[in-house]
Amino acid sequence: MPHRTELYEDPPSACLPIVYSPDYNITFMGLEKLHPFDAGKWGKVINFLKEEKLIADDFIVQAREATDEDLLVVHTRRYLNKLKWSFVVATITEIPPVAFLPNFVVQRKVLKPLRTQTGGTIMAGKLAVDRGWAINVGGGFHHCSSDKGGGFCAYADITLAIKFLFERVQGVSKATIIDLDAHQGNGHERDFMDDHRVYIMDAYNRYIYPGDGFAKRAIKRKVELEWGTEDTEYLQKVHTHVEGALNELKPDIIVYNAGTDILDGDPLGGLAISPQGIVKRDEVVFKAARSRRIPILMVTSGGYQKRTARIIADSILNLHNLGLIDKELATSGAGNPKVEQMIRDSVKDLTNLSLQ
Image 1 (cartoon, helix red, strand yellow):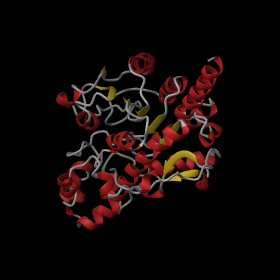
Image 2 (cartoon, rainbow, N blue to C red):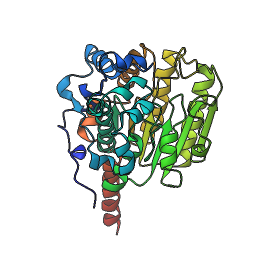
Image 3 (cartoon, rainbow, N blue to C red):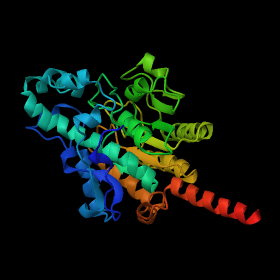
Image 4 (tube, rainbow, N blue to C red):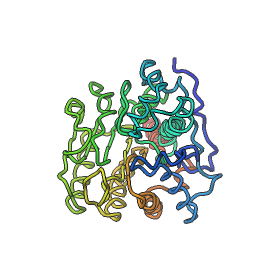
């Protein structure tokens, strides 16, 4: 019997399935500046979307912090206890001075934001199934598995979102992860290594962190990219392999890890994709999902330049302008393929009855 969780409580129907909380942002005496990550990028994305009048505070879903009980759906108690040691968190987040802070400060200033983003991803999983699509403006901690963190990822939010759906939502028994961050998503790969319900496509720079050969065995569709890969080759590969992955297996949910560290000039990604290329990439993935009526959950993952927030906002605006995410679909439930299938099945049953 699954535990009771606040993360699956239905938000007001007027809300767009865009999940965020001001608690996502990490700010503490400038320590966050010691990592190349822009630890305030999530709030900046939201501010850009407000400026463009796509959203207002009352019309987005407020993320809630994942509790220990929520996290234990995937994580081991031993791993969660390790996070009570500041030096462990310093290693995972790659911010060495964190090791010297009292752990209660680390919990409040570093781990709480990451737990809130993790709660946001779990919430967005259910929203995607209910509304047809959902975007968590944070999350995408794809280097964390059930018993090991790393690469700025302390909680396995992708694994958690999928496991929650499998356990709690009827009709969700197959998931596809499309991981297009510049780095290999070794966390969810290790978690789903022998789980045939989960199909993983991963496109990444083959030469950079984490180079996890064991985890690669879980990838069903592996796209290994060279240093400096540019738009034309990249978009062609993304299109071919996203279509191929979804034709090979039609899942009940797509989790799309939309890292922007593929951007040209990113200090860690080593690829050379333009801002327009990133917007087009997200469009390709959403078109593939929406045309097949598969619910899609997007998380924003890595991206280490100041201009990243603007690009994420531009991409969400583009998806909205193209009708790939829209308010009517989201709020009416008409975007829910399960609901539509039920309606189609009912019509078929009635037709069959009248023919008998």
